[in-house]
Length: 325
Image (cartoon, rainbow, N blue to C red; front, side, top):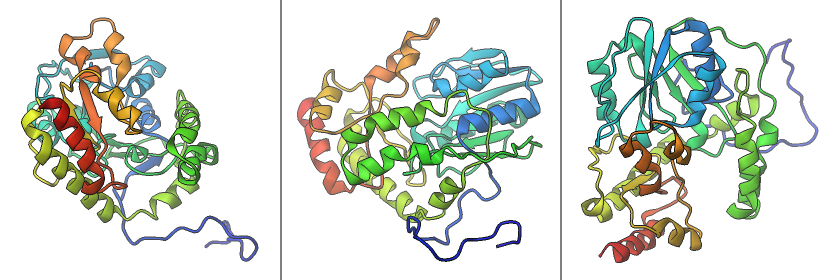
Protein backbone atom coordinates (compact mmCIF):
# COMPACT_ATOMS: atom_id res chain seq x y z
CA UNK A 1 0.00 0.00 0.00
CA UNK A 2 1.33 3.44 -0.93
CA UNK A 3 -0.13 6.98 -0.71
CA UNK A 4 -0.52 6.87 -4.51
CA UNK A 5 -2.49 3.63 -4.38
CA UNK A 6 -4.81 3.74 -1.35
CA UNK A 7 -6.58 0.51 -0.51
CA UNK A 8 -10.27 0.78 0.34
CA UNK A 9 -11.13 -0.55 3.79
CA UNK A 10 -14.55 -1.87 4.75
CA UNK A 11 -17.70 -1.99 2.65
CA UNK A 12 -18.82 -4.88 0.47
CA UNK A 13 -16.66 -7.92 -0.25
CA UNK A 14 -14.87 -8.71 -3.48
CA UNK A 15 -14.73 -12.25 -4.89
CA UNK A 16 -12.73 -14.10 -2.27
CA UNK A 17 -9.69 -15.92 -3.59
CA UNK A 18 -6.86 -17.71 -1.80
CA UNK A 19 -3.43 -16.16 -2.19
CA UNK A 20 -0.79 -18.81 -2.73
CA UNK A 21 2.92 -18.44 -2.11
CA UNK A 22 3.77 -19.85 -5.52
CA UNK A 23 5.40 -17.60 -8.07
CA UNK A 24 5.34 -18.24 -11.78
CA UNK A 25 7.87 -17.14 -14.42
CA UNK A 26 9.26 -14.36 -12.26
CA UNK A 27 10.58 -11.47 -14.28
CA UNK A 28 8.24 -12.03 -17.22
CA UNK A 29 6.70 -8.94 -18.77
CA UNK A 30 2.93 -9.11 -18.42
CA UNK A 31 0.50 -8.14 -21.16
CA UNK A 32 -3.20 -8.65 -21.87
CA UNK A 33 -2.42 -11.53 -24.26
CA UNK A 34 0.42 -13.47 -25.80
CA UNK A 35 -0.20 -11.92 -29.20
CA UNK A 36 0.00 -8.43 -27.67
CA UNK A 37 3.32 -9.40 -26.08
CA UNK A 38 4.56 -10.60 -29.48
CA UNK A 39 3.42 -7.33 -31.06
CA UNK A 40 5.36 -5.34 -28.45
CA UNK A 41 8.44 -7.49 -29.12
CA UNK A 42 8.17 -6.93 -32.88
CA UNK A 43 7.83 -3.18 -32.50
CA UNK A 44 10.73 -2.91 -30.07
CA UNK A 45 13.27 -5.10 -31.91
CA UNK A 46 12.02 -4.91 -35.54
CA UNK A 47 13.20 -8.02 -37.38
CA UNK A 48 13.65 -7.87 -41.14
CA UNK A 49 11.51 -11.03 -41.53
CA UNK A 50 10.12 -13.83 -39.38
CA UNK A 51 10.12 -17.55 -40.20
CA UNK A 52 6.86 -19.13 -39.05
CA UNK A 53 5.66 -22.74 -39.21
CA UNK A 54 2.72 -23.39 -41.49
CA UNK A 55 1.03 -25.06 -38.53
CA UNK A 56 0.42 -22.18 -36.13
CA UNK A 57 -2.45 -20.17 -34.70
CA UNK A 58 -3.41 -17.13 -36.75
CA UNK A 59 -3.15 -15.10 -33.53
CA UNK A 60 0.63 -15.27 -33.90
CA UNK A 61 0.50 -14.19 -37.54
CA UNK A 62 -1.73 -11.22 -36.76
CA UNK A 63 1.04 -9.10 -35.11
CA UNK A 64 3.25 -9.67 -38.15
CA UNK A 65 0.52 -8.29 -40.39
CA UNK A 66 -0.02 -5.33 -38.06
CA UNK A 67 3.68 -4.44 -38.22
CA UNK A 68 4.02 -5.26 -41.96
CA UNK A 69 6.80 -7.73 -41.08
CA UNK A 70 7.64 -10.08 -43.97
CA UNK A 71 6.65 -13.68 -43.24
CA UNK A 72 8.63 -16.70 -44.39
CA UNK A 73 7.38 -20.25 -43.87
CA UNK A 74 8.98 -23.55 -42.94
CA UNK A 75 7.69 -27.11 -42.91
CA UNK A 76 7.56 -29.60 -40.06
CA UNK A 77 8.58 -33.23 -40.31
CA UNK A 78 6.52 -36.09 -38.90
CA UNK A 79 8.06 -35.53 -35.44
CA UNK A 80 7.12 -31.81 -35.50
CA UNK A 81 10.73 -30.71 -36.00
CA UNK A 82 11.76 -27.86 -38.29
CA UNK A 83 12.68 -29.35 -41.66
CA UNK A 84 14.77 -26.43 -42.92
CA UNK A 85 14.95 -22.65 -42.70
CA UNK A 86 17.67 -20.26 -43.80
CA UNK A 87 17.43 -17.68 -41.02
CA UNK A 88 19.53 -14.73 -42.13
CA UNK A 89 20.96 -11.97 -39.96
CA UNK A 90 18.12 -9.75 -38.76
CA UNK A 91 15.52 -12.48 -39.22
CA UNK A 92 13.77 -14.54 -36.53
CA UNK A 93 12.45 -18.08 -36.36
CA UNK A 94 9.35 -18.83 -34.25
CA UNK A 95 8.91 -22.40 -33.03
CA UNK A 96 5.81 -23.68 -31.21
CA UNK A 97 6.19 -26.11 -28.33
CA UNK A 98 3.25 -28.11 -29.64
CA UNK A 99 0.85 -29.49 -27.03
CA UNK A 100 3.51 -28.80 -24.36
CA UNK A 101 5.21 -32.02 -25.47
CA UNK A 102 7.99 -30.77 -27.77
CA UNK A 103 10.82 -29.98 -25.35
CA UNK A 104 13.21 -32.14 -27.37
CA UNK A 105 12.20 -30.37 -30.57
CA UNK A 106 12.84 -27.02 -28.85
CA UNK A 107 16.35 -28.23 -27.98
CA UNK A 108 16.79 -29.25 -31.61
CA UNK A 109 15.83 -25.76 -32.79
CA UNK A 110 18.18 -24.08 -30.32
CA UNK A 111 21.00 -26.37 -31.42
CA UNK A 112 20.50 -25.75 -35.15
CA UNK A 113 19.75 -22.02 -35.30
CA UNK A 114 21.36 -18.97 -33.65
CA UNK A 115 19.62 -18.61 -30.30
CA UNK A 116 19.52 -14.83 -30.56
CA UNK A 117 17.21 -15.25 -33.59
CA UNK A 118 14.79 -17.78 -32.05
CA UNK A 119 11.42 -17.07 -30.41
CA UNK A 120 9.81 -20.00 -28.58
CA UNK A 121 6.01 -19.92 -28.52
CA UNK A 122 5.05 -21.66 -25.28
CA UNK A 123 1.35 -20.82 -25.53
CA UNK A 124 0.73 -24.58 -25.33
CA UNK A 125 3.50 -25.17 -22.77
CA UNK A 126 2.79 -22.92 -19.81
CA UNK A 127 5.04 -24.81 -17.42
CA UNK A 128 8.08 -25.05 -19.70
CA UNK A 129 11.00 -22.96 -18.51
CA UNK A 130 11.95 -19.95 -20.64
CA UNK A 131 14.45 -20.90 -23.31
CA UNK A 132 17.85 -19.24 -23.55
CA UNK A 133 17.01 -17.41 -26.77
CA UNK A 134 15.64 -14.12 -28.10
CA UNK A 135 12.26 -14.48 -26.38
CA UNK A 136 9.72 -16.91 -24.93
CA UNK A 137 5.95 -16.34 -24.97
CA UNK A 138 3.19 -17.78 -22.75
CA UNK A 139 -0.62 -17.71 -22.74
CA UNK A 140 -1.96 -18.68 -19.27
CA UNK A 141 -5.63 -18.91 -20.27
CA UNK A 142 -4.87 -22.00 -22.36
CA UNK A 143 -4.19 -23.84 -19.08
CA UNK A 144 -6.04 -21.93 -16.37
CA UNK A 145 -9.41 -20.36 -15.64
CA UNK A 146 -8.40 -16.76 -16.30
CA UNK A 147 -9.93 -14.36 -18.84
CA UNK A 148 -6.76 -13.19 -20.57
CA UNK A 149 -3.06 -12.50 -20.03
CA UNK A 150 0.22 -13.05 -21.80
CA UNK A 151 3.83 -13.37 -20.63
CA UNK A 152 7.01 -12.35 -22.43
CA UNK A 153 10.47 -13.38 -21.24
CA UNK A 154 13.31 -11.62 -23.03
CA UNK A 155 16.55 -9.78 -22.36
CA UNK A 156 15.71 -7.23 -25.05
CA UNK A 157 14.61 -3.73 -24.11
CA UNK A 158 10.84 -3.64 -24.67
CA UNK A 159 8.71 -0.53 -24.96
CA UNK A 160 6.11 -1.30 -22.31
CA UNK A 161 2.62 0.17 -22.53
CA UNK A 162 1.55 2.56 -19.81
CA UNK A 163 -2.14 1.65 -19.93
CA UNK A 164 -3.52 -1.35 -18.05
CA UNK A 165 -6.10 -3.64 -19.62
CA UNK A 166 -9.47 -2.87 -18.03
CA UNK A 167 -11.57 -5.20 -20.17
CA UNK A 168 -10.95 -8.38 -18.17
CA UNK A 169 -14.26 -7.97 -16.35
CA UNK A 170 -16.02 -8.20 -19.71
CA UNK A 171 -14.21 -11.46 -20.49
CA UNK A 172 -15.30 -13.32 -17.36
CA UNK A 173 -18.84 -14.26 -18.36
CA UNK A 174 -17.86 -17.67 -19.73
CA UNK A 175 -15.79 -18.46 -16.64
CA UNK A 176 -18.66 -17.65 -14.28
CA UNK A 177 -21.37 -19.19 -16.47
CA UNK A 178 -19.55 -22.51 -16.73
CA UNK A 179 -19.07 -22.47 -12.96
CA UNK A 180 -22.68 -21.50 -12.20
CA UNK A 181 -24.47 -23.33 -15.03
CA UNK A 182 -22.68 -25.49 -17.60
CA UNK A 183 -20.20 -25.48 -20.46
CA UNK A 184 -22.77 -25.10 -23.25
CA UNK A 185 -24.41 -22.05 -21.67
CA UNK A 186 -21.10 -20.22 -21.52
CA UNK A 187 -19.67 -21.04 -24.94
CA UNK A 188 -21.07 -17.97 -26.72
CA UNK A 189 -19.52 -15.76 -24.04
CA UNK A 190 -16.21 -17.57 -24.53
CA UNK A 191 -16.27 -16.86 -28.27
CA UNK A 192 -16.95 -13.17 -27.62
CA UNK A 193 -14.10 -13.00 -25.09
CA UNK A 194 -11.66 -14.54 -27.56
CA UNK A 195 -12.78 -12.19 -30.32
CA UNK A 196 -12.19 -9.17 -28.06
CA UNK A 197 -8.44 -9.94 -27.95
CA UNK A 198 -7.95 -9.61 -31.71
CA UNK A 199 -6.02 -6.70 -33.23
CA UNK A 200 -5.51 -4.99 -29.88
CA UNK A 201 -2.73 -2.60 -29.03
CA UNK A 202 -0.48 -3.93 -26.23
CA UNK A 203 -1.68 -3.22 -22.70
CA UNK A 204 -0.36 -4.24 -19.31
CA UNK A 205 -2.00 -7.27 -17.75
CA UNK A 206 -5.15 -6.39 -15.82
CA UNK A 207 -5.21 -6.27 -12.04
CA UNK A 208 -7.95 -8.91 -12.07
CA UNK A 209 -5.89 -11.39 -14.09
CA UNK A 210 -2.82 -10.68 -11.94
CA UNK A 211 -4.85 -11.50 -8.83
CA UNK A 212 -6.38 -14.63 -10.33
CA UNK A 213 -2.95 -15.92 -11.32
CA UNK A 214 -1.74 -15.31 -7.77
CA UNK A 215 -4.42 -17.70 -6.46
CA UNK A 216 -3.44 -20.74 -8.54
CA UNK A 217 -1.96 -23.85 -6.93
CA UNK A 218 0.52 -24.46 -9.74
CA UNK A 219 2.02 -27.60 -8.20
CA UNK A 220 -1.42 -29.20 -8.13
CA UNK A 221 -2.15 -28.18 -11.72
CA UNK A 222 1.18 -29.58 -12.85
CA UNK A 223 0.89 -32.94 -11.07
CA UNK A 224 -2.72 -33.57 -12.12
CA UNK A 225 -2.04 -32.87 -15.78
CA UNK A 226 1.02 -35.12 -15.77
CA UNK A 227 -0.91 -37.92 -14.04
CA UNK A 228 -3.83 -37.65 -16.46
CA UNK A 229 -1.58 -37.61 -19.50
CA UNK A 230 0.33 -40.65 -18.26
CA UNK A 231 -2.95 -42.54 -17.80
CA UNK A 232 -4.14 -41.80 -21.34
CA UNK A 233 -0.73 -42.50 -22.82
CA UNK A 234 -0.49 -45.88 -21.13
CA UNK A 235 -3.89 -46.83 -22.58
CA UNK A 236 -3.53 -45.36 -26.07
CA UNK A 237 0.13 -45.10 -27.01
CA UNK A 238 0.22 -48.31 -29.06
CA UNK A 239 -2.45 -46.86 -31.38
CA UNK A 240 -1.06 -43.31 -31.56
CA UNK A 241 0.93 -42.49 -34.70
CA UNK A 242 2.98 -39.83 -32.91
CA UNK A 243 5.66 -41.14 -30.55
CA UNK A 244 5.98 -38.84 -27.55
CA UNK A 245 9.26 -38.58 -25.71
CA UNK A 246 7.45 -37.78 -22.49
CA UNK A 247 9.68 -37.96 -19.44
CA UNK A 248 7.13 -36.81 -16.88
CA UNK A 249 8.65 -33.33 -16.72
CA UNK A 250 6.66 -31.75 -19.53
CA UNK A 251 3.21 -30.53 -18.52
CA UNK A 252 0.87 -31.20 -21.46
CA UNK A 253 -1.90 -29.03 -22.83
CA UNK A 254 -3.86 -32.13 -23.86
CA UNK A 255 -3.35 -35.69 -25.08
CA UNK A 256 -3.02 -35.40 -28.88
CA UNK A 257 -4.08 -38.59 -30.63
CA UNK A 258 -2.82 -38.54 -34.22
CA UNK A 259 -4.79 -40.14 -37.06
CA UNK A 260 -7.97 -40.54 -35.04
CA UNK A 261 -10.76 -42.59 -36.65
CA UNK A 262 -13.29 -40.57 -38.64
CA UNK A 263 -16.37 -39.57 -36.65
CA UNK A 264 -14.74 -40.02 -33.26
CA UNK A 265 -14.69 -36.29 -32.46
CA UNK A 266 -18.42 -36.07 -33.17
CA UNK A 267 -19.15 -39.20 -31.12
CA UNK A 268 -17.37 -37.71 -28.12
CA UNK A 269 -19.12 -34.37 -28.55
CA UNK A 270 -22.47 -36.17 -28.39
CA UNK A 271 -21.40 -37.32 -24.91
CA UNK A 272 -20.45 -33.72 -23.94
CA UNK A 273 -16.74 -34.49 -24.25
CA UNK A 274 -15.21 -31.54 -26.10
CA UNK A 275 -11.95 -31.84 -28.01
CA UNK A 276 -10.54 -28.60 -29.47
CA UNK A 277 -9.08 -28.46 -32.97
CA UNK A 278 -5.72 -26.69 -33.41
CA UNK A 279 -6.00 -24.87 -35.84
CA UNK A 280 -8.75 -25.59 -38.40
CA UNK A 281 -8.11 -22.50 -40.54
CA UNK A 282 -4.64 -23.67 -41.58
CA UNK A 283 -6.15 -26.45 -43.71
CA UNK A 284 -7.49 -23.89 -46.20
CA UNK A 285 -4.35 -21.74 -46.40
CA UNK A 286 -2.82 -21.35 -49.85
CA UNK A 287 0.45 -23.25 -50.20
CA UNK A 288 -0.08 -25.34 -47.08
CA UNK A 289 2.02 -28.57 -47.16
CA UNK A 290 0.01 -31.78 -47.05
CA UNK A 291 1.31 -32.91 -43.64
CA UNK A 292 0.33 -29.65 -41.92
CA UNK A 293 -2.94 -29.46 -43.87
CA UNK A 294 -4.04 -32.81 -42.45
CA UNK A 295 -3.01 -32.18 -38.85
CA UNK A 296 -6.08 -30.23 -37.61
CA UNK A 297 -8.64 -32.72 -38.86
CA UNK A 298 -6.75 -35.89 -38.00
CA UNK A 299 -5.54 -34.97 -34.51
CA UNK A 300 -7.91 -35.61 -31.61
CA UNK A 301 -6.92 -33.45 -28.63
CA UNK A 302 -8.23 -35.31 -25.58
CA UNK A 303 -8.63 -33.26 -22.40
CA UNK A 304 -6.25 -34.09 -19.55
CA UNK A 305 -6.45 -30.90 -17.51
CA UNK A 306 -6.45 -30.39 -13.77
CA UNK A 307 -10.25 -30.61 -13.42
CA UNK A 308 -10.09 -34.31 -14.29
CA UNK A 309 -8.79 -37.51 -12.75
CA UNK A 310 -7.91 -40.88 -14.32
CA UNK A 311 -11.33 -42.11 -13.17
CA UNK A 312 -12.94 -39.39 -15.30
CA UNK A 313 -10.76 -40.31 -18.26
CA UNK A 314 -11.19 -44.09 -18.08
CA UNK A 315 -14.54 -44.15 -19.98
CA UNK A 316 -13.08 -41.87 -22.68
CA UNK A 317 -10.07 -44.12 -23.14
CA UNK A 318 -12.29 -47.21 -23.26
CA UNK A 319 -14.54 -45.58 -25.87
CA UNK A 320 -11.49 -45.00 -28.06
CA UNK A 321 -10.17 -48.48 -27.52
CA UNK A 322 -13.54 -49.95 -28.52
CA UNK A 323 -13.42 -47.94 -31.76
CA UNK A 324 -9.79 -48.85 -32.45
CA UNK A 325 -10.06 -52.57 -31.73
